[in-house]
Length: 121
Image 1 (cartoon, rainbow, N blue to C red):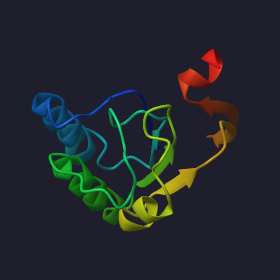
Image 2 (cartoon, rainbow, N blue to C red):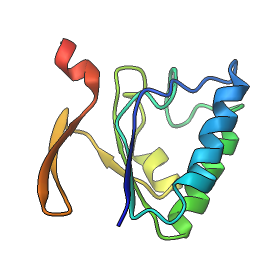
Image 3 (tube, rainbow, N blue to C red):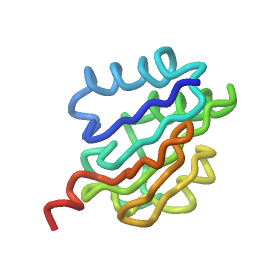
Image 4 (cartoon, helix red, strand yellow):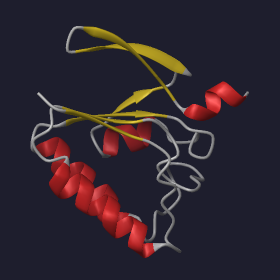
């Protein structure tokens, strides 16, 4: 049993090195995990699900491959990517948490998850 938590990568096409590292994480490191939780600000900005994602394709393709291999991905909004919606979740086969915080059962331990900016507002 392995669960990863990822937050605040702020991926941006202007930083291809960060995109490459994230793609390697989702393609290699996270492979075989039971679950990956993304706790907001995966992207530097998100203008909406209908907006092209030029430059972010390697990470998005890695999402598809990871979920097809059996790893569950759950996404929680951050303050920069709060416009990610159902279309994105459906397209990349991820679960979307729309609450500011949630308690999950992490191998028998109640665990609070949230995006850090929640504590600032």
